[in-house]
Length: 139
Length: 139
DNA sequence: TAATAATATTCGAATATCCTAATGTGATAG
DNA sequence: CTATCACATTAGGATATTCGAATATTATTA
Image 1 (cartoon, chains in turn red, yellow, cyan, green):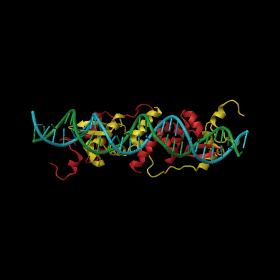
Image 2 (cartoon, rainbow over the protein chains, first blue to last red):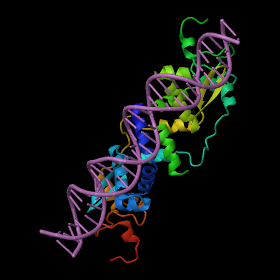
Image 3 (cartoon, rainbow over the protein chains, first blue to last red):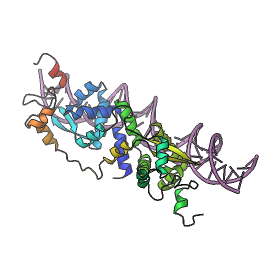
Image 4 (cartoon, protein in one colour):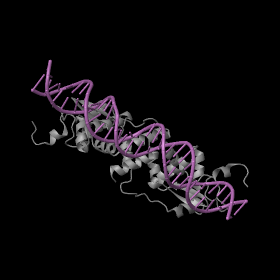
C-alpha cells in the first residue's frame, strides 16, 4: 500500500540470489539442498535468503519427510518480475527534446497529461516553479 | 538480462523516496525544487535520488532556463510498478497442503508443470533429492 | 559584474545488508 | 539410542546505502 511497503518488497526482490531462487521455484517446488546445489551457494546463505523471502510471504514450504520443499506463495510476483526488461533497455523512450516539446504544449496529447500546474515553460514566458503558479499573486 | 542487472534495478526502485519521485513524474515533468517541496525532503537528498535514478536511465531531464525538468525516461517501468500489490496481499495463494498434493501428482495440471526430476515424493516411496534422482544408480 | 536562485557534489557518520563460519535442531536411518 | 542428513540460527566482520551538512556550479537577474 505505502511507498515504504512497496520499497521493502522491491529491495527484497533486488538480490541476484533471491531472483535466482524465485526463478527456480517458478518451475515447481524444490527442497533447500537442491536449490543450494543449483545455485552453487553455501547452505546457510541460501537458507537465509529463503527465510527473508518467507518473511514477506514470497515463498512458503511444505515438509516432506526431512525435506523442506519451498514454493512460490504468490505466483503473481513472478509474473511481475517477468516484466523486467529482457535486454538492456528495450523500452522506447523519447529524446529529451521530444519530451521538452511535449511539455511545452506543442503536442496536444502529452501536454494534456501534464496537470494544469505542471511547469516547464507554459506556452512562452519565463520558467516558473509550482509554488509560483499556485500562489495568488502572479507577477 | 542477468540476475545481477535485474537485482540492481529492483534495489534502485526499492526506496520510498524514489518511488514517490517516480509516481510524481508519472504525471508529467517536474523540476527539482517542485519535487523537493512535494516530498518535503531536503534538496540535496532529492538531488541524490534523482542522480541515482538517472544513472540507471529511469529518469532523464531537459533544461528550461535554470530549471531542470525531470521526466520518466522509461514509462514501461512505471507500469510495472503499478502492478505491485495495492493492498496487503491480494494474490490468491494455495495452502501448503494444496501445493503438496499438487507436487505429488494427485492433480494432473500442476504436477505436469513440475520438471520430470522435480521432487517431493514422486507418487509414494521415500523423499528424494534431485541429485539422487539424476545419478544413475537408483537404489 | 555581482547577487541570487536552482541544482549538484563531496564528505563522513549512521545504518542496513550480506556473507562466512560455527553451532543448534529435529527427523530419520541404522 | 546414536549417527547422520537437512536445514536453521547466531555472531561477526565486511561492504553498501542513506542522509545531512557544507560547499561547488551554473544560469539568470539586477
